[in-house]
Structures are given as C-alpha cells and as structure tokens.
Length: 152
Ligand code: DQA
Image 1: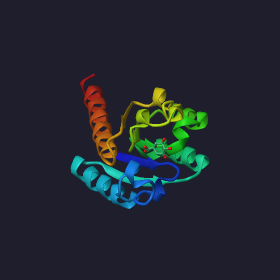
Image 2 (image 1 turned 45 degrees about the horizontal axis):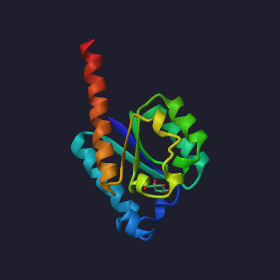
Image 3 (image 1 turned 180 degrees about the vertical axis):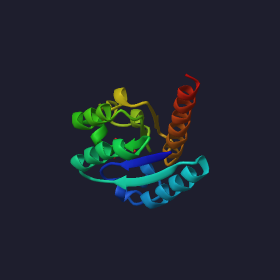
Image 4 (image 1 turned 60 degrees about the horizontal axis):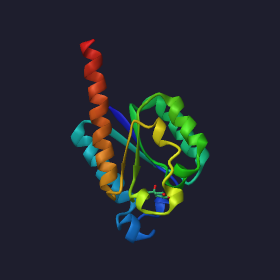
C-alpha cells in the first residue's frame, strides 16, 4: 500500500508558527512519525509540502498514478479553493482531510471547508495526532475496500 501525505501552505513553518495553536513539532518531526507509523501498518508513506495551489493540484493528479490514498492538510486553501476540491473529486482515490487545530473553535472563515464534501472523512483539532489518526483511518478504509473486493 502506498500513501501520500500532503501538506499545504505555511505548514513548512510548523514548530515556530503560532505554536500555541499548531504545537511545537516541526513538519519534519510529523513526517518522521508518519513514515514510522506507515511501516508499522504495512504502508509506504511519501510526504510532500507546498505553498502553491497549483503544485498541490499537480501532486494530487500525480498521486492517482501511484498512491492508494492521500492524507491532506490543505492549510488556508481549505477555506477558499474550488480548484483543490475539483482535483480531489477527479482523482478517484480516497482523501482524508486533516487539520491540527479545531477550526470550528476559531474564526468564522475557518468554519467552511470547500473540500470536506469530496473527502472520505476528516480529523481535526488533535494536533499532530490528527495526522496519525487520519493515516490509521486511511489504511483501515483501504484494507476494508480490499477485503470487500476479494469477497465479491
Ligand atoms: C490548518 C487550519 C487552517 O485554517 C489554517 O489556515 C492552516 C492550518 C490546521 O491544520 O489547523 O494553515 O489547516
């Protein structure tokens, strides 16, 4: 099983960026955790971050050629990007939306996600654990889909 962990804008600054909201772990720390967890769960995990909407769209398109699923934190683009939503809808592999912070406890503009409706599910508000739980959920979802296919 091959999985993409995709991080959007400003998440490269984790560790120093508003640590009271996003925690003190760096993106590298989180990626290492996810790679290790992937190994435990039998999944090969590739991590990618971009501050650019088009690069995130390209990464999603590319993922459909090699990945079984995606864990995606689109950062601020969550609340604005029709193009990212369309990319997720287009690729036909499950995407789990994750956020470090509880966006519903923050500013009103963060309460809207343009991508949730086209994602398999969503985990938020649990800091770095949003990613590990998102990864576990994705692996289990894909395993279920695999065993259902075998039965039929
Ligand atoms: C975020 C929440 C977004 O509202 C914000 O723009 C981010 C990070 C989160 O992980 O909590 O950049 O996606």
